[in-house]
Image 1 (cartoon, one colour):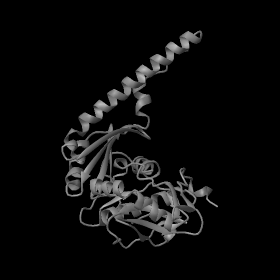
Image 2 (cartoon, helix red, strand yellow):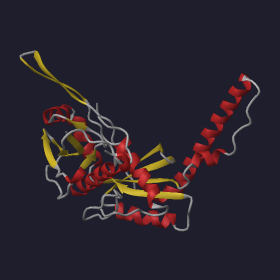
Image 3 (cartoon, rainbow over the protein chains, first blue to last red):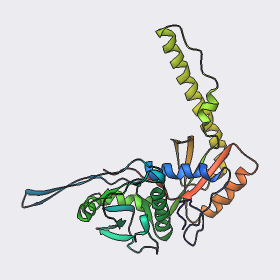
Image 4 (cartoon, chains in turn cyan, blue):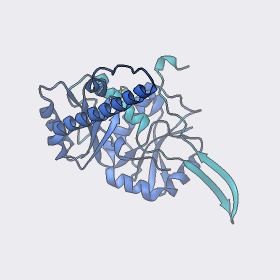
Length: 75
Length: 221
């Protein structure tokens, strides 16, 4: 699977990079990135671990990242 | 730091690597498995990493029933992630059963600023505050009419695809109104072929995908 993230169709095997039809690849890449960074399941919340009714540990699971930067700006 | 890609009911994973070339793991979370990779420190969000995330989700989705997790869900503690997923197992298992084994296609206008094009030229600025408010109201009315027109165009264009979809969601995307179609893996080949027939000779509509069903799952808090 290439790193460009384009998803394609092959029913009986892992998807190969492809675009269905119509429009430049970059256009549908924008659609894919929009889905990856702004849709899908987000599992979040706080978990409290306790024994015999006494809260011992409070653990937070947080959404850490939202934005996407250009690779050139990465340190 | 644990980066999460998807949730599945099957702990068997495809042979692939995740972000930064790190191998993926199936973290058992009760009735579910979280597909994760472990990294040193929080991952900075880059385009390359987001696309790698997408590629892993697609491979996992092709391998077994799964729901995609949004890019950026990370946790410093595996136990916390395990407990959080387990605590919401009913909703998440239901989501896997509902959309697992399905793919998403999107139908939208191919213009980058479809709504702006449909709106036409900007209205002349008014002389005072009252004129300003009237102008804004008129602009909003025109915007809603333009969006409704675009959705009508998209519905007509995607009619042949609707018959193959199990669910359809209409929403505003980065390029304007779009229709997202949920298609079973057993029909996605037919849907792709139909999409190509629909789009033959057309430059005004674009179909993207198939992708894992990101638009058909939601945040589970």
